[in-house]
Amino acid sequence: MREVARETVKLWRRHHLTYDQTKHVVEDARRALGFAAPRERRRTVDRLDREESERLSEAAYRCASRYGLMVKMLFYTGARVSEFVNIRVTDLHLALEPPQVHIVHAKGGSDGYVPILPALAQELRTHLAGRHTRYVFESNRHDRYTPRAVQLMVRDVAHRAGIEKRVTPYRLRASVATLLLDAGMPLDQVQKFLRHKRIATTQIYTETSARNMGESYLRALGGRP
Image (cartoon, rainbow, N blue to C red):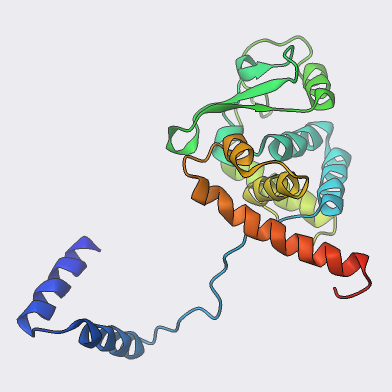
């Protein structure tokens, strides 16, 4: 891309194009290549509502207790799938109040601690059964799951739950973020929970939250949807 940009700059300078002329050149080039602009640029992140999240968790538990706990852990920690598969037993701090998980190997180096519910902490204790080493969730070969394996598991249980939306670990992260905002958590705290370096990255979830608030308002007062 940089090489293309450099060659384009040389060409435009050679022909002494003005700003408006470069815009026309770009538009003509796009038409010649058959490029069409997207109909709508999405400024919000799709998410599951609370009822869908519960259905997903229930379907996962029906498949296997381990899958149910994995889905619940993904949701309640807001972890990216690349972070989730690397959570080790030593990253759990279940005796704290509230219990916490240290998320490491984070995207962009934004490691941090996130709280979890006491009930989830108790499930993790039961799952580990006294184990103090290795990864929290391991495959049958006693190795960590791959991100792809977790993605496929989430997609499968979503299908079993009858959820028509495309469900991914990222969508679970978006879902817990908007639910926290809907419940009144300040934006800076949601930023810290998601371990975003820039608050502008977190603000996309506020737009989603505002949209969901409007939908809830209409449902409560008998309008659409």
